[in-house]
Amino acid sequence: MPVVTISASYGAGGSQVGPQLAHRLGATFVDRAIPTAVAERLAVPLSEAIAHDEAVRSVLERVLVRFAPAAQAFSGAAPPSELLDERSYLNMAEQVIRELAASRSVVILGRAAAVVLRDEPAALHVRLDGPRERRLEQAMRLEGVEREAAERHMRETDRARKAYVRQFYDVDAHDASLYHLIVDSTAIALDTCVELIAIAATARADPRS
Image 1 (spheres, rainbow, N blue to C red):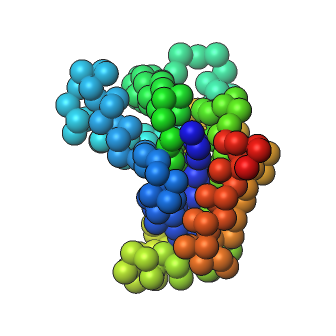
Image 2: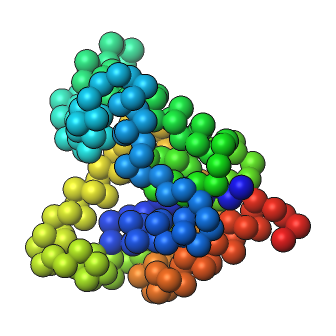
């Protein structure tokens, strides 16, 4: 059962490659299914789970700005309540990711899944990236937005993802050792990226192939 995690910088096409790859592999694409499962298990409204899922950036920014002058990792002090609240969602999301990976073929986009599943022997961890300017151009084309909006989204999204994995997992999202395959998806057509990843995922799941 192929298990693929995709980490993607803004404009690298992760939202396009992920679903196409899942279709190509006959796998389940996992993105918005995570907050749905978390909501059910924590017995909270789906809207609240989605709000937490999408609010990681704002919560992290408030926490990091407020506590940046303090010694690293709060110097043993109790974490702020906002971070504790996010941690409960994070822990449940990790559990959902592990269970999905153990039970079926999945393609998981984001959520530091490469770190969560780093000990999964057959999983393929992929990073999609590219030069900033080319990612901006691709984002404008894929999202149909003007340059100013794309630049704003890039600043917010890339900063949020970097802060997320650093704050909760103490790793660098750009660390090549986290991934088996790193692709410049601004230089290689997204359809071709799908095929490359599919080949690698099949080989990873079954070394005899």
